[in-house]
Length: 254
Image 1 (tube, rainbow, N blue to C red):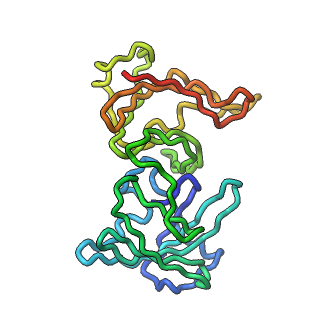
Image 2 (cartoon, rainbow, N blue to C red):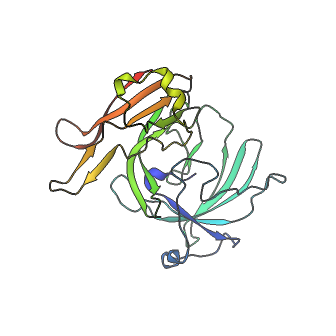
């Protein structure tokens, strides 16, 4: 999977030699996309790359736009090719578009304590960026999203833990946060989609004055990896100094 928090995207250049030289101008000739915000593993750009009988890659070369850093500076493009997978190890190679610098890595993916193994093209090594998968429920983050009409967007929201956490939005506008009981949860369509809570508990109004508004009447249900249900709603997106990006929410075990 790509790091959607950096607005990373990728395109399949096909079965070409990894040593093929690409230019920045070539990038406009390819169809770039990012992984689905739902987190579904069948909806990634790279997709099913492995021949499961031989353990070898199909051989496609991918062009990856590494998105933006924390200062909104472009991180540039690389080319990337998976090679093989065996004994809980995955091998791949990557490098700059002009084929001046290339790297090969073998990464052990057998550790099941986190959802994924994370690799940095910046430091050329695996990195510890997530806690054990049993230790958290929500991640507040930038992420890449595509609206139903196809428009891509980079936004902030709450993403659920894919490890045995399920969420649902309460669609019944007559339900009151304080009155929701455990018996009520039977009517909610719980989903494993990590972006079910997502971003639309808030909306940007262009004003004047331009600002975010939070819809505290939008209620969410979360079932954690122990099976315990919680109800949750957002109250604000600003801190006491009026700075945005500070979501305030309340929750209670049901």
